[in-house]
Amino acid sequence: MRENSTEVVVGAAVLAAAIGFLYYIVTATGLGGSAAGLNLTANFRSAEGVTVGTDIRMAGVSVGTVSGLDLNLETYRADATFSIDEGVAIPDDSSAVVASEGLLGGTFVELVPGGSFEMYTEGAVIQDTQGAVSLIQLLLKFVGGDEA
Image (cartoon, rainbow, N blue to C red; front, side):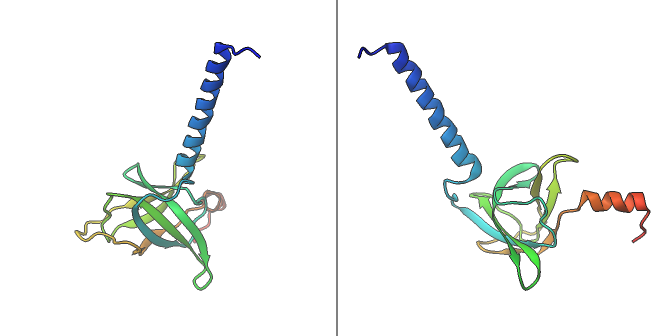
């Protein structure tokens, strides 16, 4: 069997593209393990639209991801664990809000920084949270004229 240099070059390019896609998938989904950083916890009345891997943003910039989401069977609230990137300091009076990117956009968790000079430490719990607002419930209130 004779080797053709064109086949070798094309094969190498396909292999390089496959490795590039695999690297992108591992880094984009967080499958490569959690990087060193800060782990925080927050509990929400409603975490609708939030899943593991959802962006954590401050001022529109991604500063971490949701690394865990469970139902607390004692309080019936959603317990979310956040992995914040290394080097990002968050004031300890900050709040966490489940927000959406628009009417048809995705969901993310926004960290609204407070004014404290003290920063959250590893494993701290964010006390001030606001859950997701259901667009369907808002529309039903508007259309139905509900005063409640």
